Image (tube, rainbow, N blue to C red):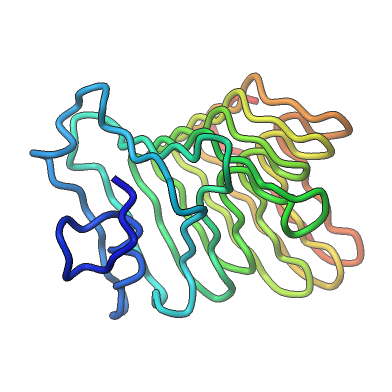
Length: 219
């Protein structure tokens, strides 16, 4: 369940655990007795997007690799799933992110259906992003405008994500004197769509820098 009542009350939700992270290099894992591979292993967000912000130090690792199947986080098209605020270093492993929808028509509210990576360093490992939508970056929007953003995607699948403007799967933004780096390794992007440009990936570095590295991946 998507509780928002702190770690000292009842079960600890993923939202609670993220909010309580208070030391560098913390790892959040999942109880295999609760997430046992059954179809009901879904966290449905009922309190809006989760935010990794000032209370979560650099080096937060959300790790479901100990489980027999992914943990699914579903926003039910009511909100974005996750925002990572500037200067954080975050890794997500073994998660399926679906039903994320950035609610706005303009930047930044309309950016990143599943994840808005805002001038931070994000690693996605063995994750699936599907059925997410936004005006910009249906799956992930990695924002390095006037700053720096790094997005590393390894062993992941992004499919069926959509953007009503650019970047159905991923929007990699290094404009306005900023820098955005996207590293894609052993991953598949398929069936993503954008009304304007970049059904799979939209990478732009106008008046800045946008770096894109692809290795052993399918687009």
